Length: 428
Image 1 (cartoon, rainbow, N blue to C red):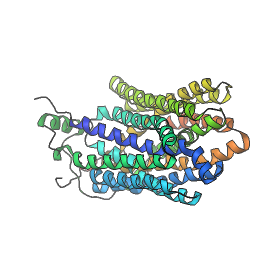
Image 2 (cartoon, rainbow, N blue to C red; image 1 turned 90 degrees about the vertical axis):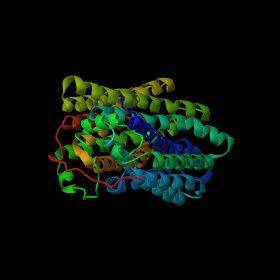
Image 3 (cartoon, helix red, strand yellow; image 1 turned 120 degrees about the vertical axis):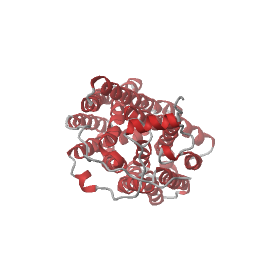
Image 4 (cartoon, rainbow, N blue to C red; image 1 turned 90 degrees about the horizontal axis):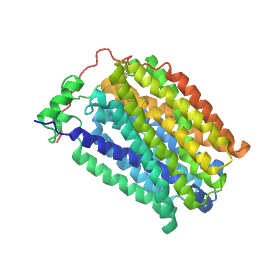
């Protein structure tokens, strides 16, 4: 009997969720010039609006990851996606900077649990040899979602207005949440679409059948892990870098490089497309290296270091060139390198965190998004005071520092020497 491939359907459902997260985040970056004009907001004020999302997102990373570990990814992701879809839609009702900040904060609260819980959702389904690939393809999906959003949003704005764009993307999230709850189960054993052969394959890869009961997250062990400390510091710097591009790059192209709305919609997408490729290549390269060398520490570390150094090598000439299209080309190279690091960064919580991978990844993601909270406002002040070159060059410095942190990350240093099995009642 050939194994069914239900785990791959689960993976692709997760990929779509990741796409929607970044589509919803990228709506505002494309709409910024129109929101500013409609609500009479300056660049620094918009920086605070953008940061409001990351404040909510950072503060609720750990509660979001805990929710996934506590009630299971099936119910947790359904609640999480429905929540954030509601508040992305309500953004259309904004009438002032204060109302925008409130809606963005509550949207961030909802999205906070998405990646940690999605990581947890795969921990009982994907084989160890598929983990970096799974993280690569899911994060590639998120960047692809962000890449296609500017073109969609510019079209919606041209036909309707900026408010309609937020409503449309909110509806998409609700549709996904219904499909997820109907199809996904927290363990393969509870899913009617998994045949005996696939179940045996998963059990063999994961060391036997695993079920789940509620138990306390061992935060003392997690917080005392040196690998977790370095992982969080590295991801803080990643968050500083990535949020600059996600939130300010379309505005940079329009204001500093003089692009039209149509050109901005096209060229703002290219770095995120390069990032999608980087996510895929990073996950595949790390899993391939781990398989060939049987050295997981090297496989995770080498890809992370190379990616950050490549990012720095692309970012510097992108800032200094006078030609807009050359800037785009170097930015694509920089984003390719930056995103090479993501799949391995998110595979490491699975490598070291066992059944508490959701909580470990939540802690890492929280630190990344503290960086993401600081970055939009900091970059807005720097761009306003010193010009747009300074934020680019500072981002390159962050990348070099993150590569140095990766030298100290050891994916073989398990947090729990003897992880306990978790049991859960059968799902309907």
